[in-house]
Image (cartoon, rainbow over all chains, first blue to last red; front, side, top):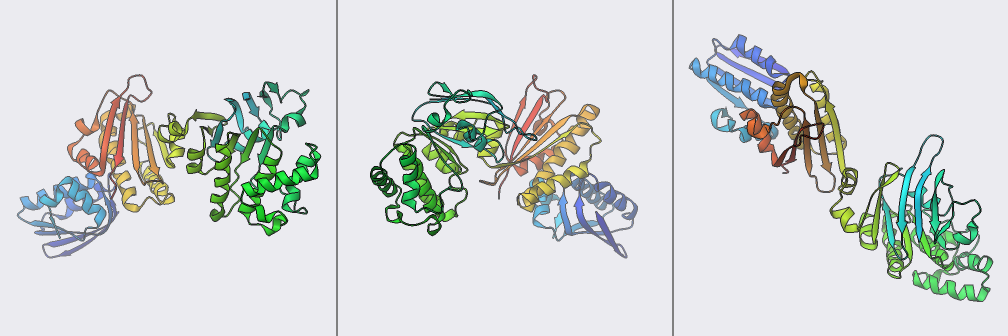
Length: 99
Length: 365
């Protein structure tokens, strides 16, 4: 998986590409761990993300919790049909802001 | 009428027939189906001794044709054979092709052979082609002429070796229609064919051949609607199968994901379907069974995709104590698996190598 990071003040955008699965979820987890502390707005752009599994969902859920804890917000953008199916099945559409 | 006992045919590098056994009664119409290269044509060629079996016996009306003392030419008169590529004599016109056998082998007069030949040509719809040469006929017409020539020898048994496989698709129907008419007349027939609908309609019995044997033998209804054995089922439903065994928790996950991708693309399953298979495999294997079973994990993954109706199913068999993942597995993972499937069946069988079996039928769009 490729992660492109853009930080503008307290806003961070992560552009995820390829697959977010068991093998790549730790990469995103590490990226978030080291970068979230001063962030008030986290945007995850999934335009280039083809596939997501529960391992990826858990990382997104943890990021959401962290952002809520530090009174920030998280938004997911540009979700393709396959990834959206996973969000819908697991109920993530109701707990994460998806635009 | 025909008794085949332990027939084996070996060539230097291949053994198309390993152990063939069958009893065929008068009036039966038997279609022989199965994947290419499984010995279907070799079996027919052994029955009329165009090939000599390496071992085993074949009896026609109680006489062993595999016995070196047998008068093969007399027994062969009982059998006609229709070949893929017609085998008409190109220097003779059609009626001469048909008359040659009866005149020279059955001792019929030319007039008698002519009248019978004309009647047969009318039966196969070629009454107006008697004076045409084979090269003037279409493939379907040539094959009908070849059938008429076979019938002229008044055989008791007709062997058809893929009679439509060399034909343009538009001509298949006319040949099958003639064979169907013959089947209704009570001739004993054995037909090697890839035309499944035809086999179902015309036959009294089906031999499904695979792995050098008659793998399954039954009525058309049994074979096509309720196949009992695994390979028959895969063939009938035009199933494409991906199978892999995992025998360690440190298996190559990325490699298997990549193989699933290749399998799906090869069979044009659609990318969404491929992702669903990968998702289910990942959730069940990586997120559930590996953490739960650990070093003792042995697992078989079977993905079956039907080209006929696009159905996809996954069978996961695994070791360890009884464990139903959809009920006892991680909540998020199982929510995802359930959402990607139409139905699921779990079974625990203590006698098998893999105690647990989970069969999932994937959702279709």
